[in-house]
Picture 1 (cartoon, one colour):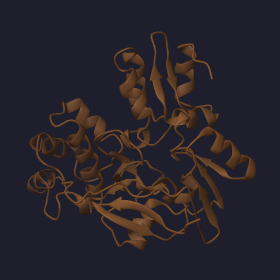
Picture 2: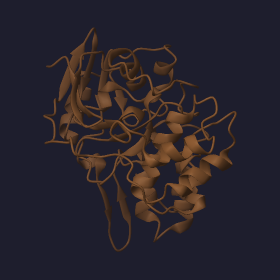
Picture 3: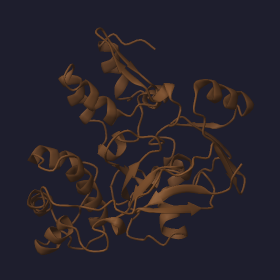
Picture 4: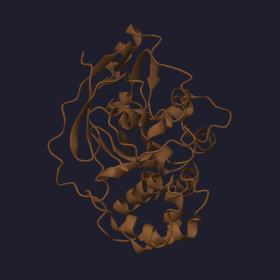
Length: 310
């Protein structure tokens, strides 16, 4: 069992030795001195901590915006993280330059997170519509600039190169477990491995996206001694469409499901777009939303209406 977490940071292979329940935000700021990523609400609401993240084994071409304050090291093994320091490869990206020119930054505290959220959008959609820009900014709060100049900067930067990938090499080796300072993570690849790990560690936190569970961690109100992640379990990450139904793995994210059902169930996709923000949807999972059993859970009412079964 190793003690380090390995991932790609801004195009460079990186290894960090810290407890698996350390938040990515704390890791970036205290372990790696990447202080461009800010802490605001520590609940995944304000977007000041936004990074771009591509999980281990992801088949998507681009990383997705995510809240570093409620992500943990347990979830990033073998993945790719891009922070505001990695945008533009050492010089300002066109988006950053446009924001500087038109006064979009003002006090600047929220600006790194806004840059990352919009960079994620422009990487996926080089010529976004205005409603797509607003949706990309739905998870970012700005108290002093006002959103119009920010939206104008995003429009002006359409189609520009945002950040390079020249330094990216082969995929990192993936460690199935790690333990540091009394916190242990197990990362199973199959349901059988997951069930065996849960039987051996019945008190372990079962961690999917963490958008709900990790809030106490961000507030330093909890610590996790044992963690079992679901993000690399192949069966739980599967999303299949047949002639009659969708089969959705419990660890499929809402962002993934939203794009998958958009043609067949446009009203369902529209509802999913109301869930939190892109940062939340890119990490929060369908199974996690059901499993929390919250009376204000977003997914179950619509899924009941669609005749879903578990």
